[in-house]
Length: 313
Image (cartoon, rainbow, N blue to C red; front, side):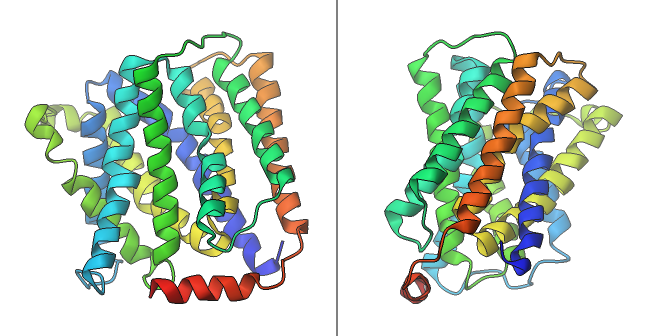
């Protein structure tokens, strides 16, 4: 691992860990009566307002193509991702959703390889990814094996995972021409804007009395400022500096953090199977990074990266 990249590995790890805590915050808000769409709209709207003083003042991207790409980021990393994932929970088990979403790093690796974005992944990296995915399954089941195929819900969840893969690829395409802050601001804007039509069919019902409850306000502030404003910016930065394959590998840590947070805050039980699964996840992530760090840089990779960068300009 090059010294200049160590910081960004820490940033990616901390970001993934913070996202692992959002499941508990979202559960609390759901218990308080907010809908998934309301939670997403409020956290993105709050993040957008808070990022304005720091983000570049320019309104639009350099051209219509790039502006459309910014809208795609808002959809794939915002409105459509959350709607697909949350709707899937209506039709399938939460364990199915968690495991399919956890396949995002593996799917991202396959997509980056297919598009030839200059990142390389050998057989060892895929085996490490499968090891972490096995650990995720053990953490999710947590001693209670519940897995039943529900095609509609499972396909919706797969759609959400593919949305995040597309998000990562588009961030890679834009990374050399726009700052992370500008890109993140546009994501929040388009995430909220593309979610508004949803409320024409399911009206926004959260009132001020609900929003001002300490539990609701506190968790919305956490989701909006920490999990959205800070984490989306640091995640985009991580993808820019590390590449999509190395950054998304840290997402395997989400279930571990979610398990620990749920136990600490909600009193949920942790079984021996879950602990073993967490160990497999950590081992898989560590081995993947060691494998990637030790992998010799193929001759011509830098030229290929410069070629792809120029082709996007």
